[in-house]
Image (cartoon, rainbow, N blue to C red; front, side, top):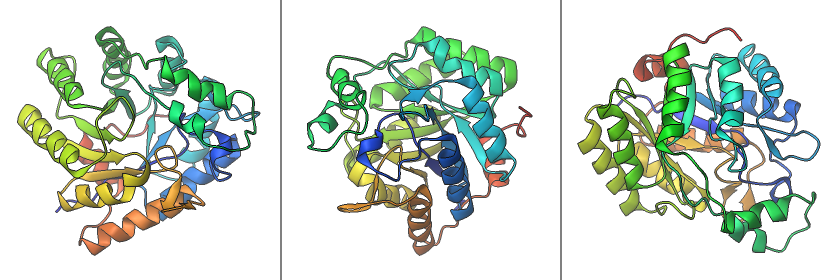
Length: 305
């Protein structure tokens, strides 16, 4: 089988600093953690940035540019820039950094949805910052917005202007049909790269039946396509192993799961990459090189920033 395109999501905007001392927050921490994941074998580095003062998610283009410049100087791993950012950000804020950076790959959530994190606020912990618990609680009555108009705007700005390709994040079966619609209309061009995101409250569950159903539906809708499993939380490694066995790709990283084993916090993104690398090797599948993945995903060469 083809080598596994192993994506590592470095920090994200879901987990808060009080949940793990190993979650990278500052510019230096994000850069170091990303480079560590690349050295451990990650093909793709999925990137968000945070306010270094308190760890809040930010869309600051200047901070993004510094992080991208520093990572790109040290590795040829594919850098995938978020267009999701955070549910608190407007579409204009979420687009600012990608437009400035002109990336070869960006993530794109495939719809508006309940993106509920409020259960994380119920666990007893010492909160480092005042914003954390209210941020999580607010998701009980909030949504993540990505309308068809929003998606068309993102694709038009990035695909049309810079040749950017996307990792399309499907949180439920309906999102796959939304992507098929965008393809039928000629808005999305070429075979897609689809992340099956499982385990977020408001989306499809993280279980074997869900993964099978997502794959079978996508194969029927898209024919030729690349796909990857993104199981959030405790299902990360088990469903990731299943995706590898099915011939797919996989995403790990502290954005999606803070643990390396039951009850044991992962000390780094690299630790999760290394573990998934061992799982791939045990199934006689290697990790795809960035050059191989660029060819398979139809990416341009990295653009200067």
